[in-house]
Length: 241
Image (tube, rainbow, N blue to C red; front, side, top):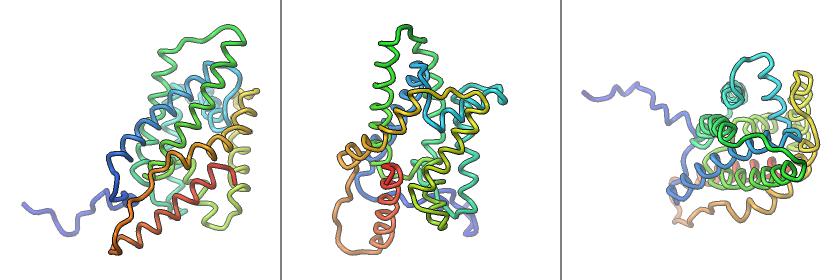
């Protein structure tokens, strides 16, 4: 039986996948997301504070009796719903981000025990922040779509709410404040992450971006140029420009 012509293909709801280097993009995306979840767990184990969104996630656990990773996943789903009025179109990487990072964080917390001693905690924090920047550069550089929170920021910018710097700062201060009021851990790691993540991404992202293979002019050129613009906007937003 043939599929009805009126049937909706769910994949059409996603942003187009670049036609070149798909294996490289997919592997880089998965490695980046797994590493991202691991480094989030390591930052928790450092016990020196969390980045703004994770302060929010941790604070939510005081009112939602679920694991840290589950709260992260549920928050991703809610943020993706906010994309609808912004007319943002998720990519495969966006969906993978929402599905992978939360359970990877929970797995890391189950495997890595709390550490004692300030020297070990500081070492863990440094590894977590640098590793998180590397993870971000890997999954962003794959060019398969921004994460849910990143897309919310770029979507608001596209709607004329404000500049990239203004919107990013506004959202992160909001979630940081709410998370802190709910009991989320704010500390030196919060400041270190805020100061270091932009410069680290600025160095790592150009080196890990999967560049498009030049092709002859064709019908895909328009979508390719559009995706290049999305990638550029996303990179600038995450680098804090």
